[in-house]
Image (cartoon, rainbow, N blue to C red; front, top):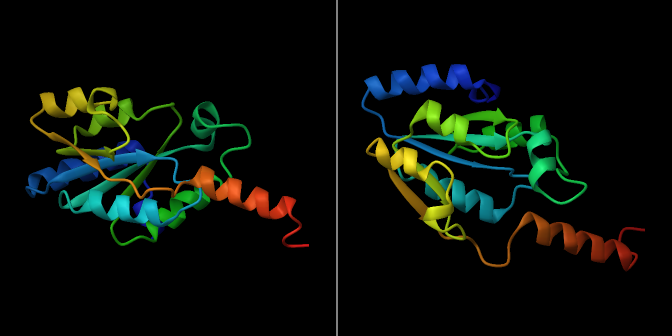
Length: 164
């Protein structure tokens, strides 16, 4: 399971070998802070777009730069291990930048997947993927399910004295 978690240079080598075998490489990214049904459906849908799914996981530093205060809840090592436990995820690489542009430039995936809450013009790396003959797929998100909503629910329950 931990063998799915690779440094970028190792993922690049794996993808090169996969391409020689005519495998279609799919890439997506995210924080995946508190894994929930929306994440699982999203990742399974992403995987269905090709033969191999590579996930770029925002590091703790990256999450702190793009999310509200006190995030991430779960550290990057645990988030990576949880993702590695999903059958639909083939490889994970952790990145420190605020966005996955560096990874997309390096991998040049055949398919780039993002949630349908992103308009294609705003999807980082979409232009690169399309310029290399790939495609961008926007996957439906599960309504009213997000890490932020889960955190808010926990806070409300705690404030009402739940768990004391």
